[in-house]
Length: 409
Image (cartoon, rainbow, N blue to C red; front, top):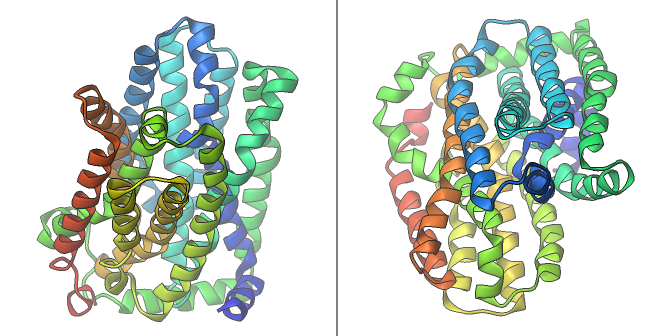
């Protein structure tokens, strides 16, 4: 497997590094990075926790809805122009956060940050990987999404250092300047390299194989009318929905389970490593089998990881929970990314992936609210973990009746 990855990377590194960079810079709009600024937002703008949570949920929900429409433009617009638009949008978001002075400005800034960071940049990277590669589609997606665990390991420390050196607002200026000065010129250069004759022939061959994998090129409307999609959707949304809810409400779970803040911080290292390793391994599995075949298996580690804290407690339980969540998040990107090409083809891939990404973003805006309602209603931590495990188990059962190898091909 390692040799396969190395050979593939040496041959196609420009487009793969482009995908990895796009996902990495998109981390500036992810919850794990923005969360380091929550206290500063509240203190500087005199916001309550509920006001800040409302601003964040409004921004996330709005970005998810817009992504459903604008993300489909990647099917019609040149990739270079789409990347430039996404990068400049992220740059604008960071400039607004640098000068944020009011609640309204915070909502708009977070909306732009979530839309271009969490939304468009990863959407661009994964859509490009799944569209341009066929026999190495799983490995390509795994390499690109490596940008997420890299960010989880590097960026929190970077945020702490920048805030301590230049202050929280000026740190957004530093982050923002990295987009036009570093990311955008490198991304455009890598895309130019990927168009060289020898590499372009590899891409065209890959595309032909990809088109032969489905008999009909399905559209977004085709997918929405397909009952198999609705049966698979709960499993597709399970990992991001649960991970976001657990992370945002860790202030509730930690004392409930008897875990310290320092312990949970250590668990994040294991989470990031599990995320990265499982993504790379599942990418190779997708190329050997298919996303359709593997869909029903990817949530299973999460079922086990949620059942353990539902039934017992202890330090080791925290590590097991985070490792299982990391495995499920890591395996989801290559498997689900390949699924849409295998079932619906590449002609409308951007529109299909925009809708899926939008639904994922909306689910990540809903889980903090739902978890908060259940917590305010008096549910215990162990009971909440049990209900989450039950949800994932039902999602797995429904996925058994969704896409099959015969139907997908």
